[in-house]
Image (cartoon, rainbow, N blue to C red):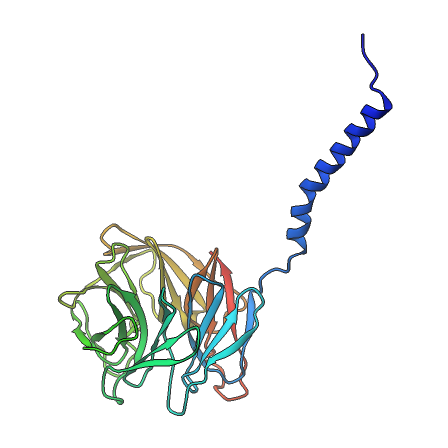
Length: 312
């Protein structure tokens, strides 16, 4: 026998089903109503950006070659504000944000600065080299030091972390490294996956080098799948995956490092119609964020600049 449900039972079941459907649909509807994070966001006109760094929170910090200022952008909205105003004669190129909230800034003209990312206060200025004949270009953090590249000299400089003043360690580059006159040489810098050495990109002629931190001896990394990383600028690493921003080529080449970080195999390239000479990169979530330096455009107070996000 088949028992026909009563009207009360039928209505009760229908109500439960409706509630279940509503509960299931609500999160999807809420997610759909949330605005998507922007893939392009503006910087102040005439900012002349080159460096970008991101920490654990969704904020990007971008330096200015015009006055050494630091701009902070909320990645969720694309809106930003000037964190550090900079000053006459100051330059900010490569940047790295430490876990303690301190920003390490490559200052081009022989200096490095440490800025509090929460307050914008300038804490320390390190004089790495003489002001002329050098180009302090990029920085990475490893151990108890922030390591800076000099694009005009075959030397890395290690400054104390933590906003402290202290002895600067100069590490001359030897081994496979040959310094070229009148060319941008050492540029982007990251640590190796095992944290025991550094990787530096030599923009001209487009090489990657592994640097022994104890001796400064470099080993040229063998590239498979592409002969060079010419115009290599910023580096970013996730595990054994190395991202090389090749600025004037408007692309990011993606490499897989071997266990010893002496061979790199090209896995793919990333590009975007929004690229306009991107220089450096940083990661948040499943996105890689880059800054457009627009080196092939007029560098005037009226020139517009943007940051760009691409999927990893």
